[in-house]
Length: 480
Ligand SMILES: Cc1cc2nc3c(=O)[nH]c(=O)nc-3n(C[C@H](O)[C@H](O)[C@H](O)COP(=O)(O)OP(=O)(O)OC[C@H]3O[C@@H](n4cnc5c(N)ncnc54)[C@H](O)[C@@H]3O)c2cc1C
Image 1: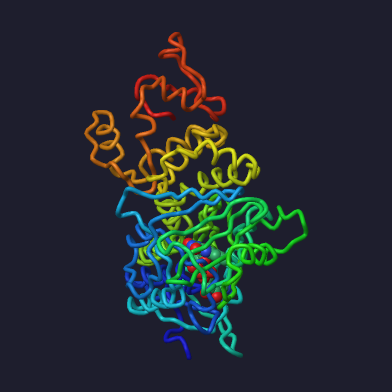
Image 2: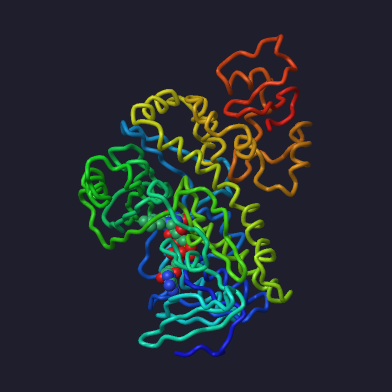
């Protein structure tokens, strides 16, 4: 196995979803691309619970049916006292998939190959070549041979254990509070709702994390936990927590596979690109810190980085300034939700088991039929505990309840004001109904727990959680 050329426009390191999408879209854009993967089999072993938000993923790739093990319509939240809240969605288009990543990852690499990318497996990147401080290639090892490959752009897609960023001088280090340890069994012979994922909360189950059951067929499921190792107080290891969980809930189950790995749960990195280099997926710490989901984020970031690389090659400009187009577009599409979701995660890890039970008790008669959408869930939780809104602050609240699709924001704002909107079940957030279906005074009362006095009418007021700045809540202007 030998690369076809002595030099490439783009070398992509790592053939996970991020790397394959980057290779596919750089090749589609006309670049000469080499994708390298250190494993001998792309997609194997799996280190993932394989759940994705299908709506977002399908914007970037087709997913053939044979790769979908289950279609998910509901989410069970099991609070520490054992109570199960079932979140659903009225949006019939909102669905999740549990994939078979062994074939899914390979399919993505095939897509890259079909677009014209060359692929080398069992080939490990060992360093970057630099001339006068400028990155101009990658050193790699294939079996017992070490060689260098020159290129104009390197895309680091080498996952959570990434070294590419560090080699390029980009700080990708993660503190102990910002990386979850995930460990999982693929189990058979167990019972669950086949269209529902179950999430178990509580410090007994998984300190500062959660346990999951993701259906993968009739009696087969991914059963795992993710927790912050730094929060373990009893000296147990992540696997001990998983074994305890399995003994309690699935004593009859058989273990078919075991896998484990790190999951970044942090704010957006300050730097994703430098001259001649870009980081995508877990290598750029782009996982959603609230859910730990990183497949879609890798797909989206990989695709944008691939397109940007092709444009940069065509323009003959691979400078940091040019490649920042990728970082900006990534931020606009998904990156901007990372900091917000990190705040929500910090809230959930800050509440004690007793508080979580109290919140569930307050919500015992609440309507969860549309709570699969994050905005609606946040509305419900914050109606029982104002602390969440205080943590989020005005700006994040605005983004949470406002459309993630900024292209027609003005139109939506106008239609909500005039009551002509037809967008009753938007994907991803519950958005404006929280703010606009009620009298403003009532809105204030919901947010603060206090009644707004008549004499306060029209006064500049501080939004809960807002530091220093005043925001007008008069009339129907948005907070922030
Ligand atoms: C237990 C667990 C459960 C998870 N569950 C989910 C879930 O349900 N849903 C979800 O969305 N996310 C989940 N994740 C996260 C998800 O797996 C990752 O976010 C996702 O795989 C990131 O994709 P990626 O392409 O960035 O990296 P990866 O998929 O990790 O791919 C990186 C690739 O780079 C290769 N590589 C590494 N170093 C080199 C090198 N030097 N040279 C060549 N190749 C190299 C690796 O072999 C690997 O194939 C889970 C993670 C864990 C650990």
